Amino acid sequence: MSTITGPNARSCFDRDPNQLLEGEKMPVAFFHWGAEFVYVIEPKDQPPIANILYSHGLTDHAARHFPTAKCLAEAGYRVILFDLRGHGGQGQPIEQSLPIKEVYASSESASQGIEKLDELHGQPVFTKRFREERYRALKKNRFGDHLDQFTAITEQITRSERFGGDQLPLFLVGHSLGALICAESAWLWHPRSSARISGIITLNPAFRPRGRPGNPLEKITIDSFWVSRGAPLWFLPVSLPRGGFKTLFDVGFPIGTAWGIPWLSEQQDESNLYEKDPLTLDAVPSRYVKSIVSQMEKTDRRRTPFPHDLLIILPERDGITSVQGGLDFARKPCTGSSSLVRLDKICAHDLMRSEGRSKARQVVTSWLGDRIGERTEKTK
Image 1 (cartoon, helix red, strand yellow):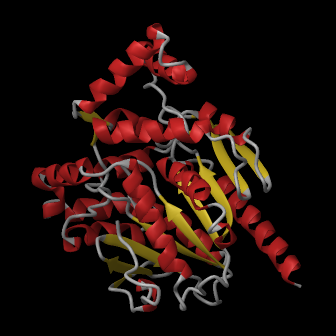
Image 2: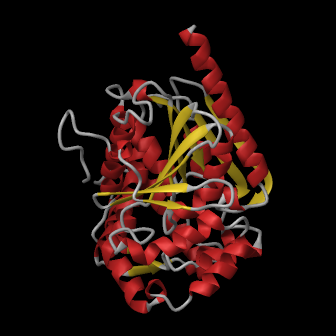
């Protein structure tokens, strides 16, 4: 776990960034703090009105969310993104993966990104060896490591004088697995750190596992596993298959992820960009996946009200995460306001790279603006 070394330790964000990744509209500041790869995008012509900590999803990496972060920065927000442990080249020499991050910082479209990746082909980041090292790095991690990482980066933000410390509102935004990290962190930090958090946005959250489309046996197996999660251990017809399922995942085998590429977006260029990107993961370790599913179960069992204002944005259909999981989560009690937005006719996992991106971004900025307005009224 990356931690702050003492009560008066200086935040990494109060130092100059290690590098600036030049973009067409605004630069991306890169901070290499300990083992962390952290990226910051700020408004160009005004002081930020709030900080946003943005977490990406499984097999993804932070740079793929630069376009959304730039839109939020244009609306007045400072956006802090980071690569989850074992993702985005994290754990490997940074000089290998930075050229890929620069592609996303400087590209204005998926097709432009594809062209720039083609120009880089042949660099070490495209080799089989890099892919194998990346997989070994992920094998060392579990979901709890992401929670520790998320907590540590949040502490760095709230201790930073440059970032306004506790004076600026802090919002958490997560896509897919990142949404699960945001939600669970909110419960874990409550009530000690609740004053720090002004609201949470979950984009197509991964709150429930699902089988691959077109594989009815897998769908029945996973749905049965999920529905039976509340059955008592003494009920052998349920407990034995569940125990066998978990034991199988403890064997430690790679689970391929290429099947999900067609479901990322309805726009072919976006799926092609993901497939060409050497930093996206084409396999994940079964033990790592088991830790995520176990966390989904724990989060689902929580009965205490969700402690913050919450926005959930879902597509109409998705072939990677369970839309029903997001709908179920939206029904949980919430101490603040809870809003659910479903994008009609959108069938894509990565909402911010789909045909619904404009609508999704409009919903996010409007919701954030309402929270900022409410906070301003309370301080008058």
